[in-house]
Length: 114
Image 1 (tube, helix red, strand yellow):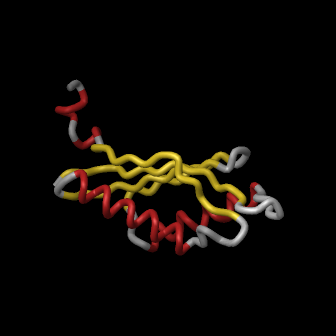
Image 2 (cartoon, helix red, strand yellow):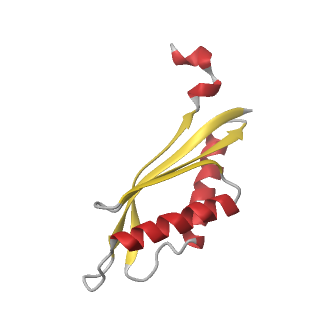
Image 3 (spheres, rainbow, N blue to C red):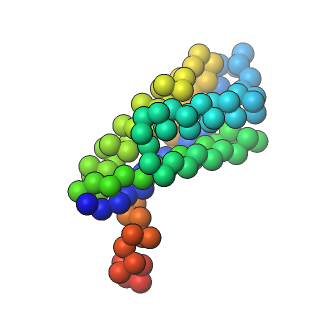
């Protein structure tokens, strides 16, 4: 098995002009989301946010036979955790800007110089 990291970047955005997304909203959501990742058995969880811009980056690591399997399962884990934490709550949503799955180089030093 090989260890992969699945990473998603996005931005929390209001869905209507009546809703104002506060820094406290973002911080509260990020905290709950990290808890949900843990509850869904995420490994090597990393969740970071930029409160001023409402941007968020999340990553989880998985050991799988190939990259596509890691991508599918990591994406499903992130999606399930976001929904469990209340993503798409009325008034705001997450606009995904980038997703990627990468080989964890720490576990493959022979590839680091390639």
